[in-house]
Image (tube, helix red, strand yellow):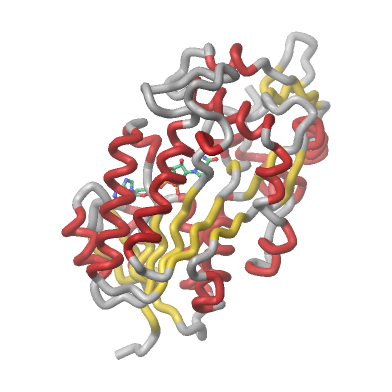
Length: 316
Ligand SMILES: NC(=O)c1ccc[n+]([C@@H]2O[C@H](COP(=O)([O-])OP(=O)(O)OC[C@H]3O[C@@H](n4cnc5c(N)ncnc54)[C@H](OP(=O)(O)O)[C@@H]3O)[C@@H](O)[C@H]2O)c1
């Protein structure tokens, strides 16, 4: 039997956990083994992980007992929650609480918790700069993650709170890519004015998490942030132009207009961009690119990512 230390990865079939799963599997001589957690061990993605050498186990973050079973016997875990499944902060809080409780029950020696800032530390609920959403939040999918840091701290499990960044993959999967404008040029809408937004290839989040895990408990008890690059909308448009071989112009969007776009979560994302914009200096400072590269020497910059993914970025 292998004496490798088991890392239980929540969301192993998805973006963040998938990057970590692939990093562990690729490091054949490394000291860690992958336990991939999925709700459906029979799905094609779960089967592919099993075929690549992962131990694949079933658990649902909304069921604490199932997670505790899945964590049992592991050395460590990567914990991520799933706001966009339900768009319910209460559900996400429950998932995070369940993961922290299960980590404690399983006596894990190390956890990486995928988190974001609680924007209410910067923008109080009565601050009129942006609307309060769902009664108690400014940026619901940020605020609950930041709030949930306390579950991991209080659990006593040595935990690194990992501040992630805007996925560049949103340009492929989330409808945020450039669109043709009336004059035929591509228009890249990003409501960040002239300020810089820390971004990252989703795959690199898991690779950075693997860097943390490999460095043992050096970062336990700390909050660290990662990004592939800090860029303005205009700089991203230039990178897209180079990758796509077409002219791309950046278009700023007023936050109120973005909040009113009408798709589910537009108000949350409008507040998110405003928060990232208004506190850009803090947001960038918390996410050092150099530190991220020290965890993950293969860290991608935006131009390289866009060139490698040009065929996948929808432009219609
Ligand atoms: N998009 C961005 O720019 C961005 C940036 C920073 C942070 N985030 C945050 O990232 C989080 C999502 O992470 P992701 O992008 O890695 O997700 P993802 O790609 O949607 O993957 C999530 C995976 O987790 C599994 N899963 C879903 N619900 C689950 C549950 N209740 N219990 C256990 N497993 C579950 C699913 O696999 P199975 O179907 O196999 O179970 C799925 O493949 C969100 O909370 C979001 O706020 C996003």
